[in-house]
Image: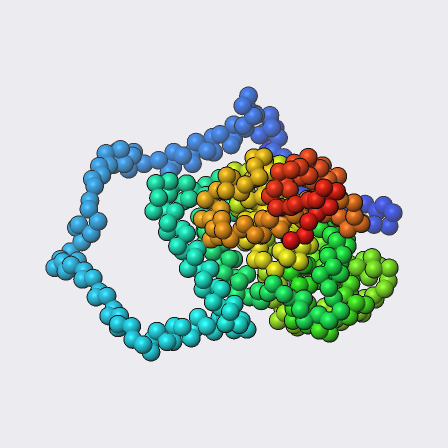
Length: 447
């Protein structure tokens, strides 16, 4: 018979390498080890659990628990301290009385609206109001027609794109159309204040900026914002800009635009070195301060490419047509006769010319889509003149020149499907769209 050995702790002390090691040895119950069952549970533990269960089990309580009956009761149904209160119907509050508008309140409303148009001339304010009325009239006429549903679903293709917020697309673009006419619009003679800068010099500088923009692989919005900043600064402070400082204004505008649009803009030293160190970092920083102060730090200028993307989705344009529109749109920023137009109108002109080229038509009346009028607020009569100027600029790109950076980009890059090399752009159809006339020797006749 093996006697039960109590649980004992033995401390062993040993000296190894100058350290005292203390360990605890546990002596297990040998009886429990010898009587272990097949299930791996000792008999002592099983008996202990059975005894505990027998002590806690009460047959009288078990019978009571087995015969428990429950019944549903309404909430607060059997509470004696709840009094039944009479039901009083809720009375809808009366609508606040709105006083009828008087002359003073109307005058205050006009003063609030005019406060947002500070800095604009009376001519620019009249043009803004005229555009709003014209856009409203065009949309009312189109929605009153038989095919009004196609104009209500112009943003249906972008409904799956959460970033496009198609539910608010029309409201957003209405705001952008007003904003570009309200905040520092360009006049058709924005270089008139410049004494040493000519449209030809601007044409050459824009060509160089396109090359710099392409070499750094910047976003399209950066290029459009750069040109918008430069043109607005020339309109305000052109009288103090000399030929030697004109390139500094251009590279500084690109530096500002890249910081505003790019996630990883080039360093200021890169912009200085690309001018062959003609302008130092300090020169660029000083010019940056002057430009931002003259523009009142307003850089949220709507980009024409944003309007073009919505138009291409509404027209269900394919890749080739959209790249053609982008090529035409980029040419508008280089042409002085088109640079002052709002971005909304530029996008419509580029899309209309792209429709004519893809349809092999020399008349824009045959390819005009009323969706363009509904989205932009411009009619076909508003785009006839700009389309003619743009078609002439496209046709002249085929002539050899040193300043064809936009043409080379869209002619050689597979990203744009090399649309600038299409034979339609140098055909008789393009001559008819541009209204070009030549003499017997092939020389263009200037009207």
